[in-house]
Image (cartoon, rainbow, N blue to C red; front, side, top):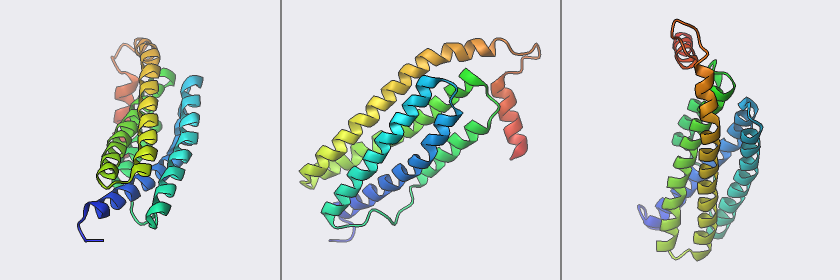
Length: 186
């Protein structure tokens, strides 16, 4: 394989996605646990099952390429997971915490959608029709999950807003209090 080739980039991008998905399998249970809304918790549990399938599809692609899926750390996902973990340490309550978790999850989804769209298009150019099909299936599942999260946000966020209206007279909201206490701890 020529160094600097599209095929080499394709494999590198697939390794990045593989690592991203494996990082996500560790983060999703924590997001589910931090959710106060049962429907949101179930969505994270379902996406964990899907993420395991995504990992399996990527392993299938690597096997057909006779390549190993390991060897790369996805720094983008690492950052998104760290941000999500920081969000869950904030002192937001119930619907406000759920709104924060949904936002963190949607940032992850958008990152994955971009990654899978990119590698699917590379697979098309490289004539990897089976890969195109597998990557396209994962891409569609990521988009569906993003849409589900949007729907959950539309249900949840009015409750989060109503919860914020009950804060103290000093005008301090959970958001301000959470951020300031987080900054002091850093």
